[in-house]
Length: 267
Image 1 (cartoon, rainbow, N blue to C red):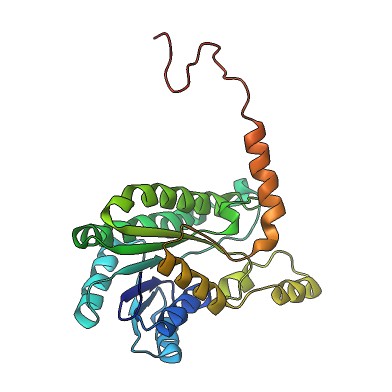
Image 2 (image 1 turned 120 degrees about the vertical axis):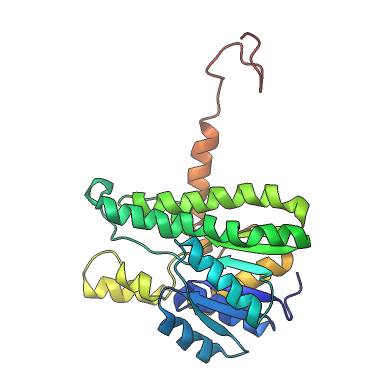
């Protein structure tokens, strides 16, 4: 997809990865709408990035908010051609059973239902036009879970699975899908949820964080080239290979002796 003049919506664009995406799309000449739960954050980024960017208040858990955002963008910029479902939250990393039910419900509402709401709002018109692109932000935790990440990983695995299915489902309509799996990236959210309280360890973690605009540029390339998977932190490849090797190693003889590869020989 050629991005010059295209209308792009980036949710959760008031900082961090979303702001990096917005900046990178503007660098390519796109017209960008930055939405965020915090309108002040969105306005600050729109002013910083320039390029005619607009800022909108947005609660991704609320379909009425999506409808309002859609109307505003269409009125100011035109129909959305690239949707970046980036808005997300985290919870403190802790054993799953210690996370409050309301915190877990909120995590699912923002990270998973928020993506569904975006698809429901914009994909029908993309189908009608026969063109468009979705970028859904998962996480390395959507590929590589670890202890105390169960809640967050559950939402990011969900985004990855939803997105892979959509890539197959939407390809006949000319709609591309990309999944971003970011690792440590400088943002307000990552700073709040750095594991541990040791000051020296936190400084070391900050030093390993990528600047958001570089992730944004990787996203832009993926949209231009219609690439499904976006891995920005390749240092995790050995762990990912080990995980998939373990999954492949589990493929042995079928559990049912007369299983015939996709169908049963007996009812």
